[in-house]
Amino acid sequence: MTFRILHVFDHSIPLQSGYTFRSRAILREQRRLGWETVHLTSPKQGARVPSEESVDGLEFHRTRCPAGPASRIPLVREVAQMHATRRRLAALAARTRPSILHAHSPVLDALPALAVGRRLGLPVVYEVRAFWEDAAVDHGTHREGSPRYRATRAVESFALARADHVTTICEGLKRDILARGIDPSRVTVIPNAVDVDEFEFGAPRDEALAARLGLRGKTIVGFVGSFYAYEGLDVLLRALPGVLRAHADVRVLLVGGGPAESRLLGLARELGVADKVVFAGRVPHDEVRRYYSLIDVLAYPRHAMRLTELVTPLKPLEAMAQGIVLVASDVGGHRELIRDGETGVLFAAGAPEALAEALVRLLDERLCWPALRDAGRRFVQRERTWRDSVRRYDAVYASLVPGIVACAC
Image 1 (tube, rainbow, N blue to C red):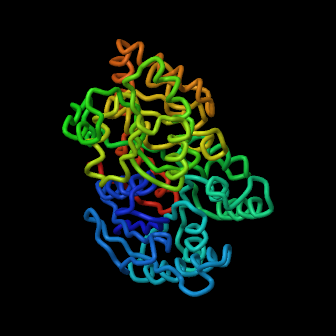
Image 2 (spheres, rainbow, N blue to C red):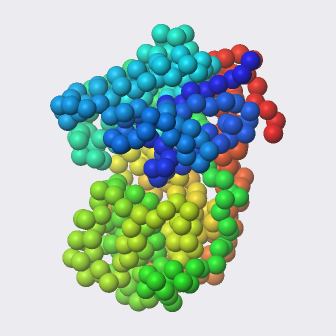
């Protein structure tokens, strides 16, 4: 019997985010294991998408955004999106006859999958990558503890209780799930990881790119990713004057974009460091490695909040795979990945002076960098490869669909 998994994603490639990169890795490795995969995205993929789209050899079925007044009213909009996803999923499941439905965060994907699974008699796996209510706090649409926040949390708990199995990306999220009364035997951690072979260890600096950006001969502290408030890039900019007093050749390179970009530009001007910060903008995925090659120290200064305390990011693993020294705030999501002084350096979250001190110490002690780089690379090779991580789905699926066996390739 062919084992076929129908995945429901919030969004996917060609959009670029840690979410889409994890999804692509899961699909690639599941196919390598001999499983068939079918892929549906929610209306969050965008308003102008084809009904089907091929990206990187993967076929994605898209759900069109609901139109009309309902698309502009909070809560009504989300209900309309779920109805659209449910209709599209029901039709796709009837046609492809999957063995299992696998819905990925947010809960707006889980509820349609649960409805369709119950109707068709299919088991449902719900993968939690972050909680919808916590992401909404960062985006400014909820306040933690508000009635809307509590209602959203209740909806999340409802879905967790009804899924046949729950997977999640880290121990922090697992602890929160268990605290909601979910049976531990129904929760499995499938951690974020990297494909080590995709990253060149100690890649030489792209001097042509450095010259184009005005960074030739400079020491570069960098960030690559989305500019959300919780990433704490304001802390990095506020730390920069203190770093410059000790190391005048330091420049900050910010690669990416997002909601916080205009505020960061204004802050750089306010602090008088605008000429010491390069905003490179968003770059094509196949160009990102060139920018990584310029960076001496990668900074992950996330603010402390529920989202960052619970969720482990993907970027520090990519930094370790490439042998780039990293400094990160001591939020729970980072502590789960980074061993302070061994695979990276941690500093007190939200404290620019602590970040400045950590950066100056790192730049003063470059003789320690090879040991940090080697330890980071060994960590991802030993504990965080996608091949080993995705293999954990084998036991999850087998518990719901007896007889499922992954190939040994």
